[in-house]
Length: 165
Image (cartoon, rainbow, N blue to C red; front, side):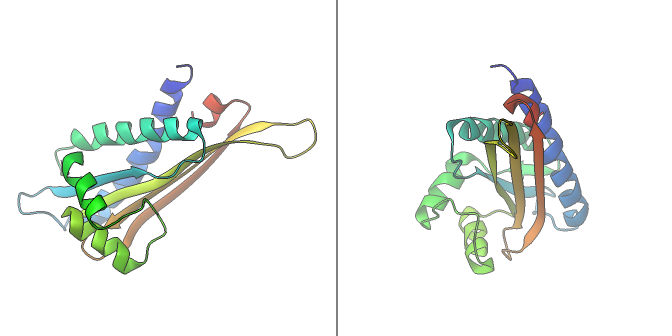
Protein backbone atom coordinates (compact mmCIF):
# COMPACT_ATOMS: atom_id res chain seq x y z
CA UNK A 1 0.00 0.00 0.00
CA UNK A 2 1.44 3.41 -0.90
CA UNK A 3 2.53 5.42 2.10
CA UNK A 4 2.40 2.55 4.57
CA UNK A 5 6.11 2.88 5.36
CA UNK A 6 5.58 6.58 6.22
CA UNK A 7 2.71 5.58 8.49
CA UNK A 8 4.91 3.00 10.17
CA UNK A 9 7.72 5.52 10.75
CA UNK A 10 5.33 8.16 12.05
CA UNK A 11 3.52 5.78 14.37
CA UNK A 12 6.81 4.40 15.65
CA UNK A 13 8.10 7.90 16.44
CA UNK A 14 4.93 8.79 18.32
CA UNK A 15 4.77 5.59 20.29
CA UNK A 16 8.47 5.42 21.12
CA UNK A 17 8.38 8.96 22.51
CA UNK A 18 5.42 8.06 24.72
CA UNK A 19 6.99 4.82 25.88
CA UNK A 20 10.37 6.39 26.63
CA UNK A 21 8.79 8.98 28.89
CA UNK A 22 6.60 6.42 30.61
CA UNK A 23 9.48 4.03 31.22
CA UNK A 24 11.50 6.87 32.75
CA UNK A 25 8.62 7.66 35.11
CA UNK A 26 7.72 4.08 35.94
CA UNK A 27 11.01 2.20 36.14
CA UNK A 28 10.77 1.90 39.94
CA UNK A 29 7.37 0.16 39.58
CA UNK A 30 7.93 -3.37 38.32
CA UNK A 31 6.25 -6.75 38.26
CA UNK A 32 7.72 -9.65 40.27
CA UNK A 33 9.92 -10.83 37.39
CA UNK A 34 11.36 -7.31 37.04
CA UNK A 35 9.40 -6.46 33.89
CA UNK A 36 6.37 -4.23 33.51
CA UNK A 37 3.18 -6.07 32.52
CA UNK A 38 1.78 -3.90 29.72
CA UNK A 39 -1.46 -4.50 27.82
CA UNK A 40 -2.18 -2.96 24.46
CA UNK A 41 -5.89 -2.25 24.19
CA UNK A 42 -5.34 -0.43 20.92
CA UNK A 43 -6.79 2.54 19.12
CA UNK A 44 -10.55 2.69 19.44
CA UNK A 45 -13.53 3.65 17.32
CA UNK A 46 -12.04 5.04 14.15
CA UNK A 47 -14.69 6.85 12.11
CA UNK A 48 -13.45 5.92 8.62
CA UNK A 49 -11.96 2.89 6.90
CA UNK A 50 -8.73 4.81 6.29
CA UNK A 51 -8.52 5.68 9.99
CA UNK A 52 -9.27 2.08 11.01
CA UNK A 53 -6.56 0.77 8.72
CA UNK A 54 -4.01 3.29 10.01
CA UNK A 55 -5.00 2.55 13.63
CA UNK A 56 -4.57 -1.18 13.04
CA UNK A 57 -1.10 -0.65 11.58
CA UNK A 58 -0.09 1.63 14.46
CA UNK A 59 -1.32 -0.93 17.02
CA UNK A 60 0.58 -3.73 15.26
CA UNK A 61 3.73 -1.62 15.21
CA UNK A 62 3.37 -0.79 18.90
CA UNK A 63 2.69 -4.44 19.71
CA UNK A 64 5.88 -5.44 17.87
CA UNK A 65 7.91 -2.72 19.59
CA UNK A 66 6.64 -3.63 23.06
CA UNK A 67 7.11 -7.34 22.42
CA UNK A 68 10.78 -6.85 21.66
CA UNK A 69 11.50 -4.68 24.72
CA UNK A 70 13.17 -6.72 27.49
CA UNK A 71 11.76 -4.37 30.16
CA UNK A 72 8.19 -5.28 29.20
CA UNK A 73 6.07 -8.37 29.56
CA UNK A 74 3.35 -7.82 26.97
CA UNK A 75 -0.02 -9.21 28.04
CA UNK A 76 -1.29 -11.54 25.31
CA UNK A 77 -4.40 -10.55 23.33
CA UNK A 78 -5.98 -13.87 24.37
CA UNK A 79 -6.05 -12.49 27.93
CA UNK A 80 -6.85 -8.85 27.11
CA UNK A 81 -9.89 -9.39 24.88
CA UNK A 82 -11.88 -11.73 27.18
CA UNK A 83 -11.03 -9.53 30.19
CA UNK A 84 -12.40 -6.45 28.43
CA UNK A 85 -15.48 -8.33 27.28
CA UNK A 86 -16.01 -9.73 30.79
CA UNK A 87 -16.27 -6.28 32.36
CA UNK A 88 -18.36 -4.90 29.51
CA UNK A 89 -15.71 -2.50 28.23
CA UNK A 90 -17.18 -0.79 25.17
CA UNK A 91 -13.97 0.69 23.72
CA UNK A 92 -14.42 4.15 25.19
CA UNK A 93 -11.33 6.21 25.94
CA UNK A 94 -13.39 8.53 28.13
CA UNK A 95 -13.29 6.75 31.50
CA UNK A 96 -13.39 7.77 35.12
CA UNK A 97 -10.39 6.84 37.24
CA UNK A 98 -12.43 4.01 38.80
CA UNK A 99 -13.46 2.65 35.38
CA UNK A 100 -9.85 2.82 34.19
CA UNK A 101 -8.69 0.97 37.33
CA UNK A 102 -11.29 -1.76 36.71
CA UNK A 103 -9.97 -2.24 33.17
CA UNK A 104 -6.41 -2.64 34.47
CA UNK A 105 -7.56 -4.96 37.24
CA UNK A 106 -9.53 -7.17 34.85
CA UNK A 107 -6.51 -7.51 32.57
CA UNK A 108 -4.04 -7.92 35.43
CA UNK A 109 -1.49 -5.44 34.10
CA UNK A 110 0.73 -2.72 35.50
CA UNK A 111 -0.08 -0.39 32.59
CA UNK A 112 -2.23 -0.38 29.50
CA UNK A 113 -2.14 1.65 26.33
CA UNK A 114 -5.11 2.95 24.41
CA UNK A 115 -5.89 5.89 22.19
CA UNK A 116 -7.44 7.11 19.00
CA UNK A 117 -6.14 7.75 15.51
CA UNK A 118 -8.15 9.59 12.86
CA UNK A 119 -7.42 10.75 9.32
CA UNK A 120 -9.49 13.60 7.86
CA UNK A 121 -9.79 15.60 4.68
CA UNK A 122 -10.20 19.22 5.72
CA UNK A 123 -10.66 22.59 4.06
CA UNK A 124 -9.71 25.99 5.49
CA UNK A 125 -11.08 27.96 2.56
CA UNK A 126 -12.90 27.54 -0.76
CA UNK A 127 -11.11 25.34 -3.33
CA UNK A 128 -8.49 24.25 -0.78
CA UNK A 129 -8.21 20.76 0.68
CA UNK A 130 -5.63 19.12 2.88
CA UNK A 131 -5.28 15.92 4.86
CA UNK A 132 -4.94 15.88 8.62
CA UNK A 133 -3.83 13.06 10.91
CA UNK A 134 -4.79 13.24 14.60
CA UNK A 135 -3.31 10.75 17.07
CA UNK A 136 -3.93 10.56 20.81
CA UNK A 137 -2.07 7.95 22.89
CA UNK A 138 -2.86 7.29 26.55
CA UNK A 139 -0.83 5.20 28.96
CA UNK A 140 -2.84 4.30 32.06
CA UNK A 141 -1.69 2.87 35.39
CA UNK A 142 -3.59 -0.41 35.61
CA UNK A 143 -3.61 -0.46 39.43
CA UNK A 144 -4.81 3.06 40.15
CA UNK A 145 -6.52 4.05 36.89
CA UNK A 146 -4.43 7.21 36.77
CA UNK A 147 -3.45 8.61 33.39
CA UNK A 148 0.34 8.35 33.40
CA UNK A 149 1.04 9.82 29.99
CA UNK A 150 -0.94 11.43 27.19
CA UNK A 151 0.45 12.57 23.88
CA UNK A 152 -1.52 14.25 21.09
CA UNK A 153 -0.10 14.85 17.65
CA UNK A 154 -1.72 16.65 14.73
CA UNK A 155 -0.14 16.68 11.28
CA UNK A 156 -1.39 18.48 8.16
CA UNK A 157 -0.28 17.72 4.59
CA UNK A 158 -1.44 17.66 0.99
CA UNK A 159 -1.85 13.87 0.95
CA UNK A 160 -3.04 11.34 3.53
CA UNK A 161 0.27 9.49 3.31
CA UNK A 162 2.25 12.66 3.98
CA UNK A 163 0.00 13.57 6.95
CA UNK A 164 0.88 10.35 8.74
CA UNK A 165 4.57 10.42 7.76
